[in-house]
Length: 251
Image (cartoon, rainbow, N blue to C red; front, side):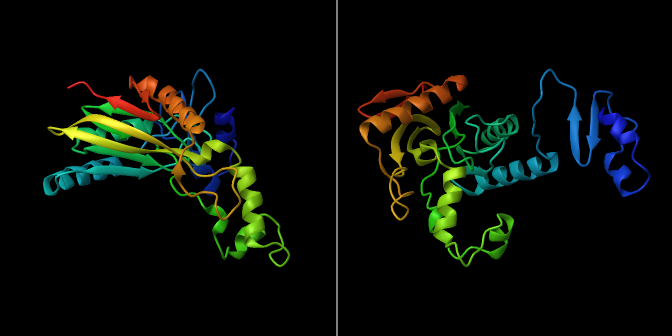
């Protein structure tokens, strides 16, 4: 069907946006800048620009020469804030960063916890969640935000709008649950990681919500059990001891 849409486009800017090179495989199609491929199920797959990947890894190798300890990091929301699983391209980037000399890889962006992987003796934190999350205290907001939501800025305060927006976009406790990771290294390899659960006051009023504090015992247990589940696919075992998550890495 997509090929039929492509072939029915008249000559011009639109047709140039959907044309497929002659050497493209039969099971792939480019349409308006998006590449489609035949698969067993519907879904979205992300791949990195190989030039960008090369530049990033080059920078890590250069940093390793000049530094005693290198942390590689990325801000990425893919495949979406709703997902607690890291996309394939991010796993590839993280492992390549470690192989290129990074001593630790830290991902952030999805606003919630994702799993922890130990790769070549170095930790990969796909996301530790939010640390501060005080979105409701932003002010002033730009006029285009009100225009996009068709809201009158003269009758709605920034705080009222943001409280409504947060309730619809981040209205679940998972956005307010995170951990602080403390890593101990021996001979250039991570030996132990301690994970201290943190909560950001999901149920508190606006001015207090989003500020990190030590998680209450029941909330902390829930946070660490979530991180246990998310880290299992990477072969990472998290033991909960006295309200703290512990990863011990065999030498």
